[in-house]
Length: 213
Image (tube, rainbow, N blue to C red; front, side):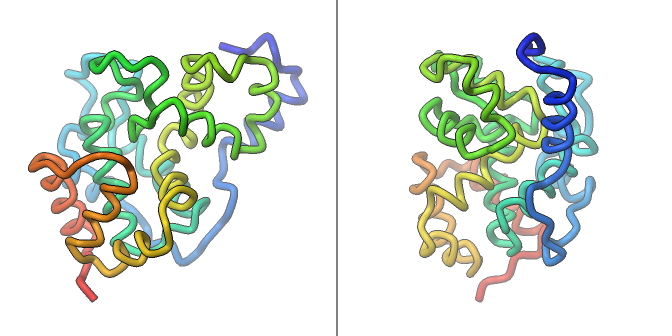
């Protein structure tokens, strides 16, 4: 996909850029495979996945999720718990990267982001600029395919959204570990709380040791 657009030199440049987080941050706590499995039990295996090519296990997900925290400076357990619970819920335990069920073309990445925000997200990534020049940005499927082609970008959308689209007060609320803070975050990402979503969040809060300040 898109390989005909890339010279060998450009391919090397983009591969290098995609392989690493844009910003290193030693204050980001180490995330473990066991923590992810405790939050998203289905991520222990992809054996029963409906779309095996989209499924990622906790072993495969832990590095790109950690990279997104470093890239977007998401360093507190409360914020990390919200992000992990969101992508785990939206992707059904990291099994999906495309919305196959609601009939919304172009909706995807691990937090099932809308096409509008997928384009904003893609435009925020310098390494994707050469690709975006070669596709019609109104082609929402092409923009989504560009993002999900690379694991770090696929898993990085939720951290990008929090850091760029939610207010400082929303982030402060998550940092506090309060229920009100999580509710404000849910409003920011444009959805509603449900018992299933809250269950993912509670597991993430427990796994990451979130405390209420």
